[in-house]
Length: 185
Image (cartoon, rainbow, N blue to C red; front, top):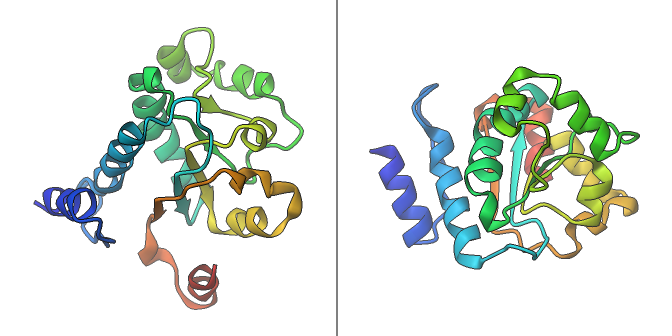
């Protein structure tokens, strides 16, 4: 029921939504499906620029969502529509190329099962390629988002942006000074 209500509110009415339900209740679908709907309607293939910003409090949460929800859905199942996704966190090593990341990921049987021998170009792996061609869906954390917005070298990431979604996942985990920082950000 909460998913139905969220999809109705976001997709049909254009409302902002807070989804507060238990672990494993399907909160991700409440934001992922509206993002997919909008990206497909906007026909974003070949038009780089951040459209959805997914902010996580911890890299572990960002990685879990990226690897097990976003990549299989956006990169694998919807590859033909050209939706791009990238993770820009402290774990996105600034010295690594796309090839370095691809080699590392493809050592893991999970990613071999998803991609075989080469990772789809819809998954932007390196900082350089995200700055060159910003992803439609940008996954980050609040600390890195602050750096991305403040440092001039990162300005290219948002030049062609048309942000329609800002998702603050696990918002209940922020408190005190950290919550204030996120709110001001």
